[in-house]
Image (tube, rainbow, N blue to C red; front, side, top):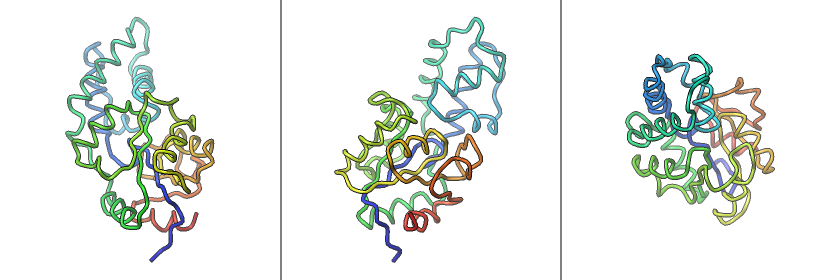
Length: 219
């Protein structure tokens, strides 16, 4: 058995554990439609995700004509309301995710989630997918400064009882937060990467969740 020297492994949500692009894209395009903007294609949506819904909406507005005359806060509420009502229509674990979580849990490693998604939405999503009980902690936006600030990662380790921890993500928000929290990090190449995966600054990069156990063992 490959030895892993971590007590806690934390994960980002969007683009790391879960492929949320279709459901986020549907909510984004619904919001854009209410102001007469055309839809953003799914492949473009993946490039807009990361850093929270406000940043995603700012990016989408820039792509579709700018923000002049737009009530941004009201539009963001439209987006979030639609997303909350349709949060798990298409969203699923990335391939290999279930087996990877099973393997880590079988080894007694505590699992956690730290996401910039508002915490009530993150909890609702995991509830609807039947995944909540797998995690010792689910920490979302609203309690601590958003990543890349390290505060939520420190809270994650404390909530899991301390010990050596690693963090898995898909963007610079994740790798920079991990570095600031002095945690080793793994980047997934299949997520919503905001830079080429090998330029994210992670200690390791994986192309499939089957590769996570060996990557953690090597850290």
